[in-house]
Length: 229
Image (cartoon, rainbow, N blue to C red; front, side):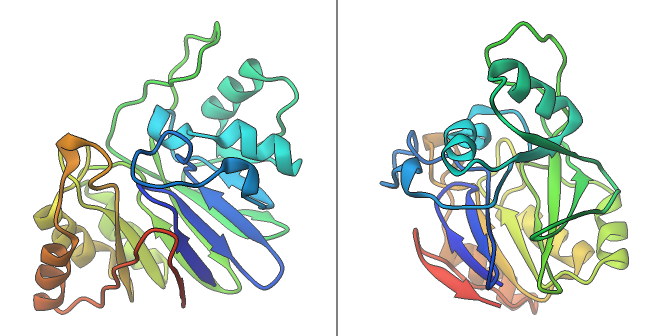
């Protein structure tokens, strides 16, 4: 599994034959210069309905003739917004097998508003994402605060790497992410969801020092940098 950090909470995840993108907030991200039209993937995965996670999902999905994978409620919003989009509904606690791997959504504690303009008034649950490719599992926590079930997720899954939000305000901050790590027990951690906006400034080196002092294996990924696990 290869993981490329595309800024904010966006990750490009690749195996030998497949690639998927999570929360592709690219064209409006002030800190990174990536044209969504250059992204080649087999699926777009979206954790929840806020604009900085939906991002360029529809553009990328249509350009690649690939599905958007999200909760059923969020898929309904995408379909109503653009009938030409293909979607796959995933569920919290249910493992769904797809050509490129396996996906399971997890709970997340965050707002459920959907920033897609259409006539649908339904909200959509915020979620985390357990993504398995080539036998290795990434836990992308989405936007979340602490919740008790994190320990259960760690106890029932072997997590090779976890992407932890550290910017605070809307998610866990640096110190809270350490508590998360103690619950989910991943083998490796990377930070996400920080510095993009003024109110989520965080020092990733401080995060790394605090995580390592608690015995956790961490990696800082620069924008557009790729790591292999």
